[in-house]
Image (cartoon, rainbow, N blue to C red):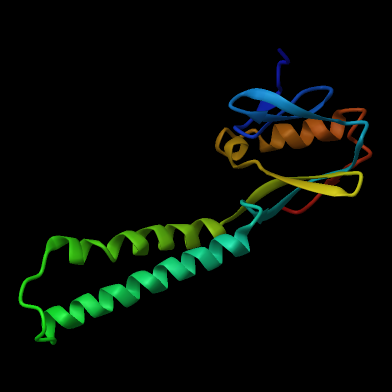
Length: 156
């Protein structure tokens, strides 16, 4: 088992490279010799943020639409005389999930951007910033012989 200098839920960094982790187990290793460019920048925390934003907007609109009709029937309409709690609770669930999805899709944070061959991987390093290890990561990437020529410092 490799000991990592920096660890998050998604990846770990050792002296040899960046190890992609799933449930704490290494499933892919990106060696520093294969990396073309590496940088720490600000960006979106999730990769398909546009899809998540559209999904959240659709859920929120659907929840507002149903909530409008329920409230209209309750206060103004005369067709239905009995209302159940489920009729009021049903529109709340899509509103909450949609609002949270919009929040997550629009959230910006620090990411580790790695260019390998023609592919670019963006890894969120929010867990490292909570542990106050961002400065240590930048120092490590600047002092490591395999990464100091490939690391680009970006204003944070």
